Image (cartoon, rainbow, N blue to C red; front, side, top):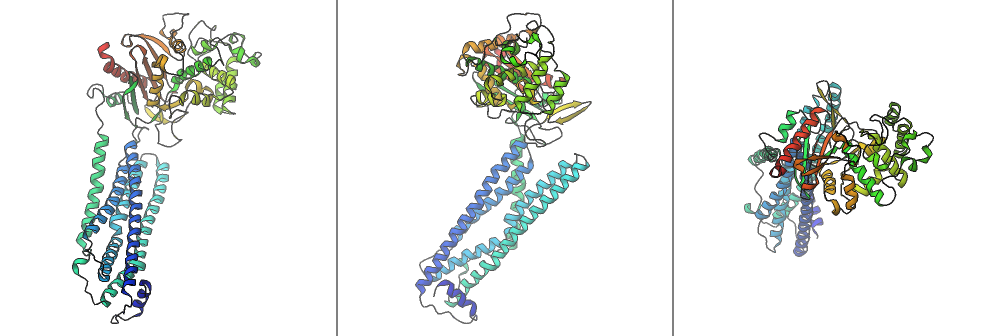
Length: 602
C-alpha cells in the first residue's frame, strides 16, 4: 500500500478504525519522497518570490533616487519586507524543526511540522504579503491624487479615473492572491495535515508537543502587523534622508548651486567641470518640470542649442581630412544645380566662411522658409535642402567675408553640404562619426524625453510673470545649428576631445588648431569677430590666453561652455529655461567653478 492509497483508505474509514500497514518500509519511502518534493517546491517557490522582490527593490529604489519620490522608497520597503520575511521565516523553521531519525513515526512527525507551518503561512498571508504591497499601492494612489490636484479640473478628473482603475487592479491582485492561498489551504494543506495526524493515531503514537510548531496566536499576528508598519515607515525615512541630504556643492553658504538656482528663479541648474583630462566635478539642483516634484539628476539630458555648431564644425573638419571637402570648397561647387536660383553673391562663399559666420547670411531666415520648415514635410535631407534653397535665393545681409553675423542658417547650409557630399542624413552622419567614437551614448536630437512624459527635464519659457513648461524645439531643417540633446557628462566628453589636441585620435593637430584659431582678417573691436570654427576665441586671464566659448538656446533651454586649452580645463553650465535669468544663472555658476578650480592661477 503506497501513501496515496493509504490516504484514500483513511478518508473511507471511521475515526475509530485502525489502519493496518503491511509494508512500513514502502510507506516510509513514499512519505520521505513526498516530504523531499515538498521541500524542493517550497524552496524554489520562495527563491522565486525573493528574487522578484529583489529586482523590484532595485527598480523602485532607482526610481525613488532618480525622481526623488517617496513612493519609490515606500514600494521598495514593502518588497524588502516581503523578501526578508520569507528568508527569516525559513531560517527560523529550519532551527525549530524536530530532530528526526530513520523511523516511520519520526518521518511522519517531521512532515506534519512542515505542513502545519505551511498552513500557518497561508492563513497569515494577508499580513506578511498582501498588506505590505497594498500599502505601497495605496501610497502610489495618494501621491497621484495629491499631484493631480494642481493640474486643472479636467486633468484632475482624468487622473482620478486612471488612479481608480489602478486601485481596482491593485485590489483585485490582492484579493486573488488571498483567495488562491485559501484555496490551496482548503484543497491541499488541510487534507494532508488531517491524513498525517490520522496516520500517527493509527500507529498509536502521541505527537509530542515539542515536535509541533508553536500555535499561531493572535499576539503573533499583532507583532507582524506592528513590524510591517515600523519597517514601512522607518526604511523610507532613512533612505529619503540619505538620498535627499545632498553633499554641499562648492561654497554652500555663498555660492551653492541651489542658492544660484533660487536667486534666478530657474527650474533646474546643472554644472560639470573637467580638469587634466577627466571630469572632476558635477552638480545639479532643481526639478525637471516647474511645479512638479521630480528632481533632476546628473544623468538627465539637456538641450544644448547652438553648442551643436561646434559639433557640426568638428564633423566638417573630419570630412575635410577624408578628402570629401576642402576648407575653400564653395557653395556653387557643391550645389551647381542651384545656380539659377541662388543669389550670385553666395556662389563663392566657402565652407570655412560659413563655419566662422562670415558668409553674409542674414541673422533671421526668410519668413516663408521658416514657416515651411515648421511643417516638416519630406525627409530630413529634403527639409534641409528646401530650407537652404530659400535662404540662398535671398540677397545676403552684407557682402560675404566682410562681417561676422551670427546666423543659424550658416550651419543649416553646412549640414546640407555634408549631406550632399556623403549622401547620408546629418543626424546619422554625426552619430556614426562623432557621437559613437566619443561614447556620447545619450546624444540625440529634439526635445529630451517623450512628449508629455517626465522621464527627462522639460524646457521652459517665461510668459509675463509665469514659468511655463514647453517641450517644443527648433525644426529639423536647422538641426546642424541647434537641435542636439545629451547628458552633461557626454558634453564634457566632447569638451575633453577638443582639449586633447593632437591626442584625440580623430583629428590631426593642425586641423584642431584651425578650428580653434580666430579669424585672421576683418578684425574689429567686437570680440564676436574673433570667431573660430564653431567657437568664439576670447582672451581670458584665468584661461592663460585663449578661451573657447559658445552658448546655446532653443528659446526653452540655455547652456554655456568655456574651454581653456592652456589649463586643460572646461566648465559647462546648463538650465532648462531660456532668457536673461538663465544666462545670468549659468554665468554665475560657471564663474564659481572657474574661481574654485583655477583660483591659484588667477
